[in-house]
Amino acid sequence: MSALSNLKMDDAAKCISADAFRNGMACLPGAVNIVTTNLGAEKAGFTATAVCSVSDNPPTLLVCLNRSASVHQRFSQATNLAINTLGAGQDALSNVFGGKAPMEERFAQGQWDTLVTGAPILASAAVSFDCKITARQSVATHDVFFCEVLAIKQNDEAGALLYFQRAYHHLEK
Image (cartoon, rainbow, N blue to C red):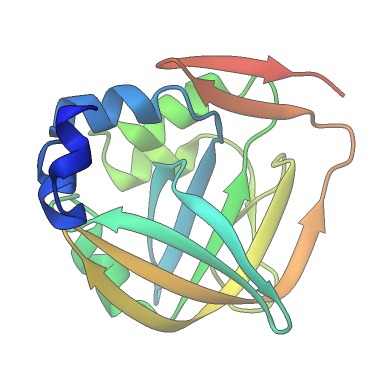
């Protein structure tokens, strides 16, 4: 009988350290996304793997953002956002949006368009989802944004950029 078998579920969850959880999550491959928004003429964006489908009716995605992130205040005021899923070979762009570069430097990389909401859409993304934010929920250290998809732009030849075992991997078309 394991030591955990006698613990209540709440007690067992407390036995998982943040490091152990992060190490486990490193084994969960994720698509690499650049999440963007605009507040008037001011653009903001960050790199995220914490993006997933919620429903297809209405089409809804969720994205998670750490409240300590430098872009959090901008996104907490936003009414729209775009989820731009990166294609194979777009590692450098992911790094720029995942680092401490000023927003002007981030958006100087790549070509940016808009669809319906005005959120920045990366022209070379594998797929971009243009969304209105319909709900927010604070959970632990993060805010979860629920986003209804209003428009989609796909690039069927892009492949995919994945993050797995703390490294980028390219999935070619």
